[in-house]
Amino acid sequence: MGKLALAAKITHVPSMYLSELDGPGKGRRQAAIDGHIEIGRRCRALGVDTIVVFDTHWLVNADYHINCAPHWSGVYTSNELPHFISNMPFALDGNPGLGTLIAEVATEMGVFTRAHPATTLAPEYGTLVPMRYMNADRHFKAVSVSALCTVHYLADSARLGWAIRRAIEDRYDGSVAIFASGSLSHRFAQNGTADAYRDKIWSPFLERLDHEVVGMWQRGEWRDFCDMLPEYAAKGHGEGFMHDTAMLLGALGWNHYDQGVEVITPYFPSSGTGQINAVFPVSAMPADLSGIGEPSTAALSGARL
Image (cartoon, rainbow, N blue to C red; front, side, top):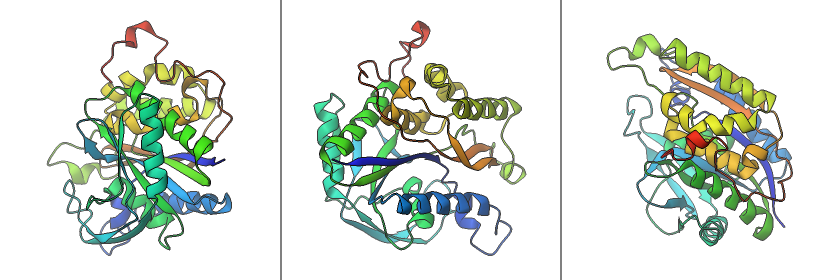
């Protein structure tokens, strides 16, 4: 049936858009833009037809949601950082069939998910920014998944990722890439200090923590990382409580995943936060994923996240 062709954790920092424009930020995020272009090139080489984005700027307070309209177009200004992304034009084609299929399979597997193929809901910039650099010619269709989940368990987000892979491989006729669109640590600079932190991490603790996490990913230490994910999300100020990362790992096998990541854009600071573009090689899923999303450490089993 279908194929999960590529998986990645990607940045979407709004300073990438500023990097295009004349001003003090011009060229500052070219390495991140080049990383997006390279990931998009790989998707084309692999025959990907649709990119599914786990968007940590789409906040939801109940259930999981999928934005899968046939088309989106307009002019976007960020409500969070309107001085960074202002009046940015966008045009994307969606994949209502795949989005609806994912919602059906996830709900069948016990993770209640709603597809939205026919509303005025536009994507957030966690989707729009990467599509700007990977998909300017609208070569790919896009599906956006809510990943700023305020009252959800990370275990359920991991199960959603697993359901997404099952939908792709068991019931979809095509080739798909999935992206966890969000940062590592995400502690913005304190108000009034933003300019001083344009290219700095907020604290030495968060910078050390992020570097350790990237090292774990490169070494393939997934059992340990999955166990520490709830605490990393909380104490490391993970963007969107790291639900995008839980979805990504759920699709790859959670703590059964057996690959080391390939860093495309090395870790970099932006406005106090930690950012990266990294490809997670796709490998075969294990036969038994009955405990997907569950921590093996008893102390974490009751964590809200």
